[in-house]
Image 1 (cartoon, one colour):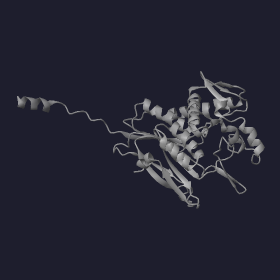
Image 2 (image 1 turned 45 degrees about the horizontal axis):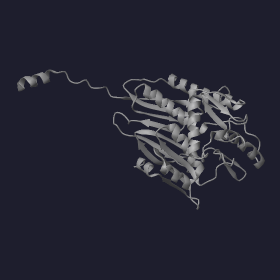
Image 3 (image 1 turned 180 degrees about the vertical axis):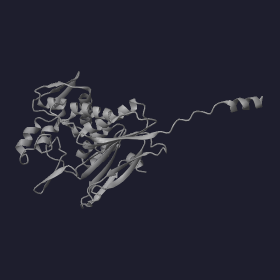
Image 4 (image 1 turned 90 degrees about the vertical axis):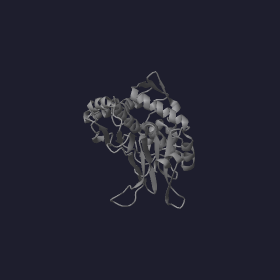
Amino acid sequence: MRFLLLFLFASLPPLARKPPLTPFHIRGFAQGTSYQITYYAEDSLISKAQVAYIFAQLDSSLSLYKPYSLISQFNRSENGLPVDRHLSKVVRKAQQVSEKTVGTFDITVAPLVQAWGFGASPPATGLPDSVAIKALLACVGTDKIRLRHGYLHKDKPCVRIDVNGIAQGYTVDVLAGLLEQRGIQNYLVEVGGEVRVKGTKQPGGQPMAIGIEGPASGSPDDPYPIRKIIRLSKGAVTTSGNYRKFYQSGNQRISHLIDPKTGYPLKNELISVTVWAKDAMTADAYDNALMGMGLEKALRFASRQHSLEAYFIYQTPNGSVADTATSGFYRLMQ
């Protein structure tokens, strides 16, 4: 009997081995920046044309640089207009984060962003004075917009929104969703430095490695050096900082990050904030909000949040650069 069983097992065909997963790469330029997608599959499942189509859809909804986009139409409207699922999702998340951060994050900051020279239209000559800032603040506040049944309302014609602080993260999530719809379980999606990953590198199974850059080193060969490397198998990592996008006006350094409560560019010790969250839209919104809080408040806030970790680069009182992080983010760096 034992011989018969052995014979039967020996006669069975060997189990078919799955072919190894191959890395596929898609790279290009969109939304004023570069992007890259790496996924692992048995065969090519996503084309660059499909990715380009998604970028075009998102630009038609969220881009301030496209006069035909829904957000541009909303900003020109008197009372608001019907919006699509993309703008609806971004506005809804922005309102949630604004409420959670007591207005530190606010997409209605658009008039102030424009006044300080960082909007889609050519900047005005000179810096805005206190009178102009006060007038613009009357048009700012998340309470001045309402999303109901697919219609985005505004209280005043002067209310305008700028979703640049959250839209890139949302773009990453949409692209990740496309990969997952195709059954892809191992990937990395990056748009303008905002990253979302799932799974591991194939065929070795190593975790994805992501570098976090810091402020300028002074070296032309490595202007923004990598300060930390984290490894993860799921989630999203995004960064907000004031060391890339700014200009000098006399002896003033004008940052593109505007405080929606005061109307002036942010001034605190924070140089950059990197956030890990389950999805890129959440991380992207909170990295901006934490930048606005200042180090002590931001670290305390991030440490209390579920499924949110943060890494901070800041300037000390003596002018040196230091860093710190939540306990969960330190674990990502191990």
